[in-house]
Amino acid sequence: MLAQTRSCLNFTAAFPPGSQERGQYTHFFEVQNTEIAHRTMLLQIVKFEVVSLFLLLSLATCLIRVSAETGGHYGQCKKICKEFFENDLGTQLCQPALNIMPRPGVYKACINGRALGFEHACIPSCMGEKVVEADSFKACKSEGKRARPNHQLPWCRRGYDVTFDETKEKISNKAKELLKRTERSHESMSGERRYESEPGPADAVLEENIEIQVDSPKTKIDTLVTVTKEENEYDREPAPAAEHVNLSMERKTEKKSSTIAKDFFDVTKAESSTEEF
Picture 1 (cartoon, rainbow, N blue to C red):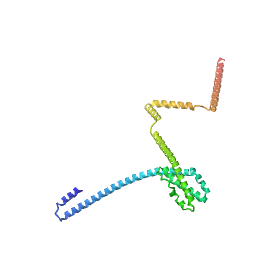
Picture 2: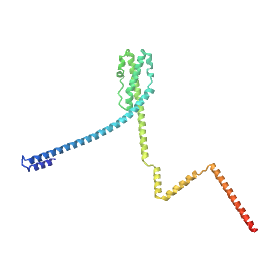
Picture 3: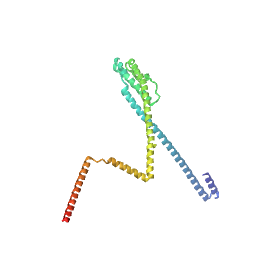
Picture 4: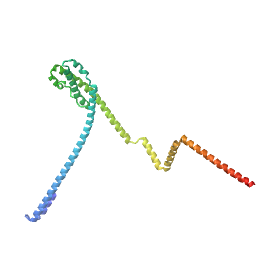
């Protein structure tokens, strides 16, 4: 563009200053240079937009993959925690609280503490995240504002601490087992795909047989004939009714042929006796 501008200046320098021709050519070259600058700027903008779109698509693909994997793991952890909460998290720890006055309030405080300890420990332990240490005082802070905090707050903290430690240990073990099962399933699936993609010895033998049959038509025909004969030998087992029909037809044929032969002999005998007379 710089070289073109210099050539334009050299071209317009041939006309005297202030002439109409020089003004026309100067305006023409200025408009042309402006259009070239606009085109260059638009091209740069398009390139920038294409690169930005590519980067955004790559980032979105990575985020979708990570969210899918995390979502699947999170769903499995929710299922494990639900089963653990329904089956393994009993109420035996809070049973003695029923004998302490006020009975419903202390028992409820213990149950709330167990529920909070389970909630704070289960999902993070299953997901493999860093579990924050148990803080029963902070979790059961609301129980200290009850009517009789001297009984309710200790039972809430007791339920929280015991449940937090128990859940953290058991759920971590179950998460490890789940991770092992998932890895085994992925390995088995990849092994099946690899086995399907790689030809085995049977496939190699089949390919050799096909090549032999294609190379020698006589071998192919002999093989087909042999297979057909074997199939006919296996299939050729007539039923008892068919054997009976065949025997009856043979007997009728023999009887008919014997009758025809007898008539023929009788006619021959009569003709010979007539010739003798």
